[in-house]
Length: 485
Image (cartoon, rainbow, N blue to C red; front, side, top):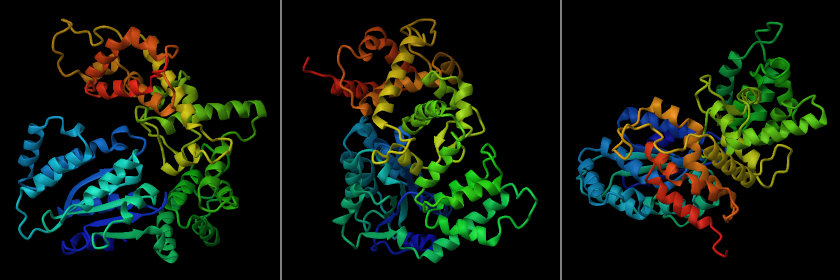
């Protein structure tokens, strides 16, 4: 696969200038994209890269896509930087303009202004395009990339995504000569099996051996069973290894391996995720079990829904739950959550397929999370925290002369004035309101918050370097107001 992609990047420019690698969750698209970007970077052939990510606000939006690509082009292609600089000086708000104008001013025109005599094409790597939150932006990006004449602008684009309708429809009218498509499910099963075996072997070798010290653990038959069960999803193999190695779960590695093998669900992951979550409530009485599931939905549902991940302590303060309790619950979920050793590191969903498992409205398992209700809860928690914490006040930073120009804030002092959960609440309470689908009226908590803390909120955004975001936030708020009153 990698040889084919690298060969495409080095092929003559008149050939297809856009390569679309498609596949379902867990088949290895992002791993391939990172590897391709790394190989091209070492060869000096990487023009730019952008990795969309659903749980990161700035990486789930197309607003930052073309400016990011332009910044990297300016660094990597001689002569382009002055033209991009001129475009920004001519229109300082270019990054807030329509995608088509961003593309023309920041990419197309600067690249055309530079001579590229006999130059080999450089490649832009774009991963997980389907995780861009607006379908119309996905369609626009593809449409604009297809407009590039690679004979004039020697750029190629390597794009990965799931086979979502928004991406598929945007590509279906593309000229075949411009797009090379490769579905990962078209790879022969024997090749996938060999690759997953290579993936599994060293990971199982590092896991605690059988209690009897049997160096042949797992035996060949057991390994083959796990291998067969993993095909065609690398993420199934990775999740299984994390579960087998998780000493926080009762039993030893062999018992946990047998749980995976005895689970009759194929490698669609849902059955494995259910198996892992069931272990967290095993043996509990019915009433306690219901309470634990409710708390799971609050804590893990929030992690799956946050616009940007928080560390465990900040998440606990945002949710008004004891930090120790949150840590105890998270410690049972290392198989499905990326929990860093550093207490200040953000807790993330290990793979998007787990988020899909949690918030899929078509699934009705006991751990299902109501996405809109969770957004509404988070908006309420953000507003309550901002209203009652005492952090939002006049002269938050303690300037000697309020009203004077503030120097660039010291990050440690800023964290004391505005802890990370307060900063998160300032930036994202409107986002959660919007995602919840609520209609604002005079009875909503947002009104007294704005009456008491509107200027304090703007001051906090200013200290965080986010004051330019306030216009969009206010526009979003206005769009949620019930104007019939």
